[in-house]
Image 1 (cartoon, rainbow, N blue to C red):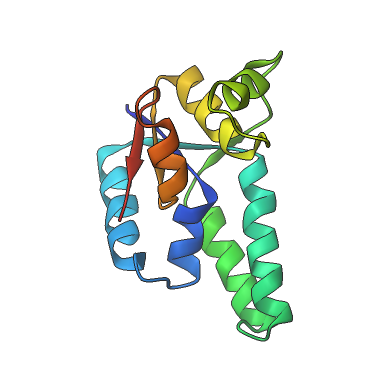
Image 2 (image 1 turned 135 degrees about the vertical axis):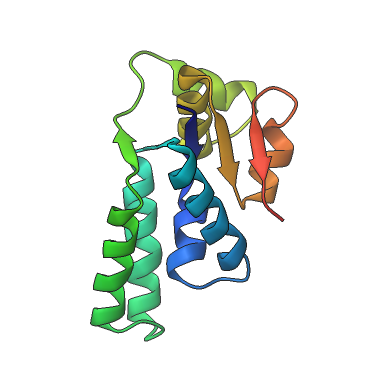
Length: 138
């Protein structure tokens, strides 16, 4: 079984029907067929909720759309992990010269699981690609 870490952008592309939604959907289907285990830091749940909240407040999504989006995310079967113990996330952020720990949480989890991190976040991928296993969808 292959472990795969996804960031919030992957789930959001799918549920918000963003430009890469078809590619992301194909990847999720392939991972399901292959029996891959999907992982994300618990932070992803908050990032997804925040993006859906913004879309709801701006009337891009109805209450029903938000409920459906959350159901789609739940059906992905992602295992959400608490923050790594110790200073791993902070050390990762400092190593990448970042001023926040958000991206580092994904990278630290991928490193801990010896997994690839899949993302649509170009700056994250470019900043970390030489030190971490990051797969950018562009």
